[in-house]
Amino acid sequence: MNNSIETEIIQYEAKLREAMLQSDVKALDELLAPELIFTTHLGELVTKQDDLKGHSSGTLAIKSLTPLEQTIRIVGDGAIVLARVYIVGTYNGVPSEADLRFTRVWVPTSNGWQVIVAHSSVVA
Image: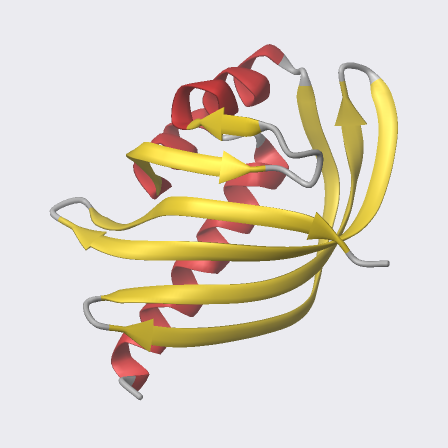
């Protein structure tokens, strides 16, 4: 395994968590690839623009995001992150909390690493 890439991805995952917690649209714009497709735990397909709009409008507000597990696999030039997190926040003003498992694919770009695809599911 390439420890240098793994270290970078750990740092980028931390940046992503902080950007999500702060609804930092500028940071999210840098971390999410233009082609991003995120399949939510509800089966919805979310684009980068959808995600940025959710944060900027306040529709999505994450109050806490607690990492429970994280595994990183380097594949070719990219990286796959398998993570489990406990999230507390609001969506459309409705309080919500969930134990979720995420899969994220990070790809290297001229702007640094970016998430190009992600998926989440509820841990039963």
